[in-house]
Image (cartoon, rainbow, N blue to C red; front, side, top):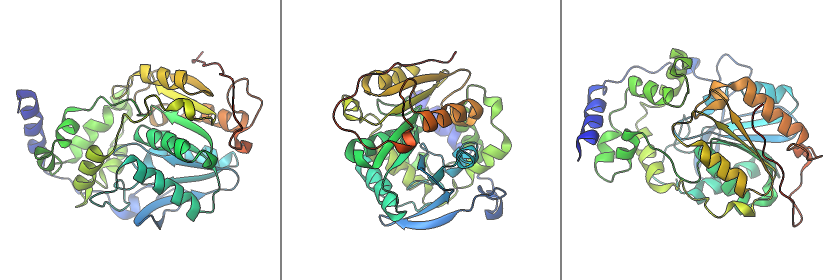
Length: 328
């Protein structure tokens, strides 16, 4: 092991003492109009929110996140007249954390079976980071189920892993590394996803840390890091015909903006918008701007496209390429 990796391990060991997580009654969505429910999908018990009426919009969070990451997004989308479905994905949050089932195809099957379970024939999929990969994979495998896509700092061409996650991917030492996970470390990782780390509150850290002490958390994280392909979308995006809004934080340390530009180049019907002064989690750091763009996309489709994606039906054959716009 080189010196840098050893220092990371020692840091983990130093912060190994785990804080007590916040109690159940304080965990999101407590204190909001939303109610969490559980539903078993593809053999996995998922914690989820299903609220509102109208065209379904399904939110798929990124690695290490949960329902909480959509706290700023769900209320305005419901208020605008849409049905929102958000869930703790397999292995994350307070959903079940099995030893395996973390391949890309496993998550695609999970999303499709969730849609089936909820009686949703097709939906707009909003995916962040790893969730963006999953959303795109669903559009590739089941184009008839996807009305539109919103990809927020999506993985697909690889990730810039923080040191400890590089360790967690290793066969042997990974099991040790994921055993030591304190609240301090959760906060450090979360702050790395913001352009301005001061934007992360102690309440945010509490919510992100709440599921971490669960016995299956480390095993699930290792499973995701070993089984899921974060670079699976190369040379495949041209097959996606659903209208797609690509959003990217200009200060993303995890996935560079050039990957967002590549998504926009390779997707036939896409618009690319960069979010200034935002990192890897712009929907949390710049929620007003992201919500404005998301709702505009849901109501009006891509710029210059005279259609509402709420009424979009999976396509005939060919579409012309539309412009990619950047923030004014």
